Length: 414
Image (cartoon, rainbow, N blue to C red; front, side, top):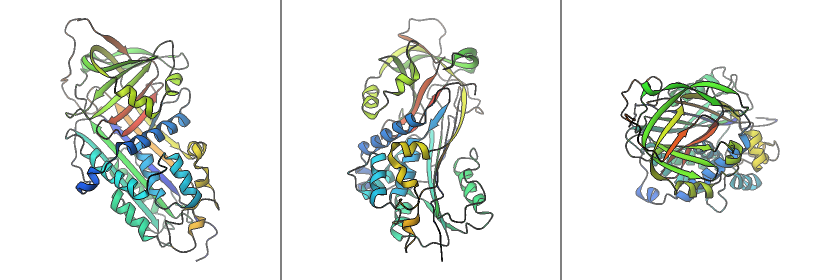
């Protein structure tokens, strides 16, 4: 078979977050006790640090943003299993995992998949992986065995010349994002494509203390461009995990009943800015902030919003140092396939697509009576926090330390 070039058509991550009330049983098999006991939070922290770097590269004035560091890091680590030489070195540098053996990373991700999916009986968090292989190639057994064993990746060979190939892949994405992301691969599939590595994250969990819909009111939100928009603002009062940092305030809103999964919200002070806050985002500061939260009495006003975000990550990852992986003739993913084609494989695109909706109970469709604490009188509060200007948010599991989602709301009316 003569090939002028071969490409990895895409490392694709499709992630969505819905706060809601349904729960689904995890399908992730429980790893051995030795793998669970060897889980390292330090590696999860490395994924977070990579996520902060990627987030800063993608952030721009006035644009809502949402990425899943867990999703992108896991997808890239699957590809890392087939990288060699300078490409492998570049990926290790960008992913912040220099010094870690690939087996160590794989086992940690295997444990992470299980620990996240079983975090809370009232929260659904499913992470699904798949590998779609061009049937014209022979793939290295070590590569396919690793992604199947450690990432529980559904592995399937396809005829990429078949006009229905993209539909087959998109059907898997639709199923694993509960129908909210319906297309990630544009038909027709390039016939020179070698494979797609796809990671899909689905989150659904209702607030531990829900907002009372009767207390939601239209309020002014001041955007980055000093434009005023009117948005539905939810209200809640009571005891919160709260932190007053330098030039910002932060609040932790838990999901479910285990207090493990939570949205952590950061509001820059009025005389500061979201950009100033974002410049401080790194794993060291993050750890320091989270250790400083305390229970305080206060009031919270948070906009109800929906975000749909889609981005090619090529430019951002290149800026972070992964440019070699996108260059034909220079990238080396020879660990993925057998024969002489490995030196011709490069990444054509890393595409990331996310969806988020937040309302009083979680999902917009849920009609649940509020169980949160609401004010019937006006006691004295330690703080009054109104998210009426651009803010940063993250969804994190406190046990593993993994940040599943992070982003910024610049304009909740978009």
